[in-house]
Length: 98
Image (cartoon, rainbow, N blue to C red; front, top):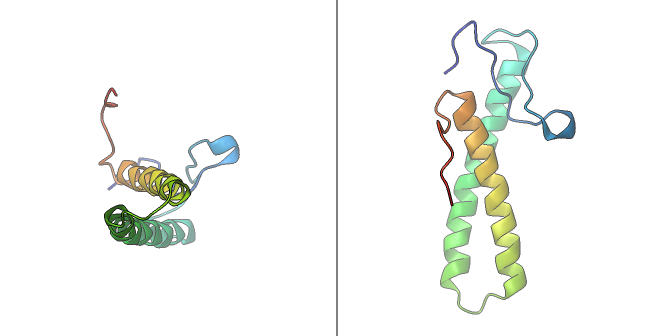
């Protein structure tokens, strides 16, 4: 979690996809509660998507278009989960090399 003097990374992007931080808020303020709600929703969606992806990958009849859509949704969910982890102080310290 962020300490009192740290800015919280919000679970949505600002203009041009840049990180968004509240200019002023407290732990129980409206923006903080909204961010908590959105983070919980994003994590729940990622969990459901992970379950769905297992089903899609187990089905050998899935076509390339379905797999492409799944990859796009997984990429978006992973981006959201990493933003939540970073916001909570547990984000990646260094980027892994491909």
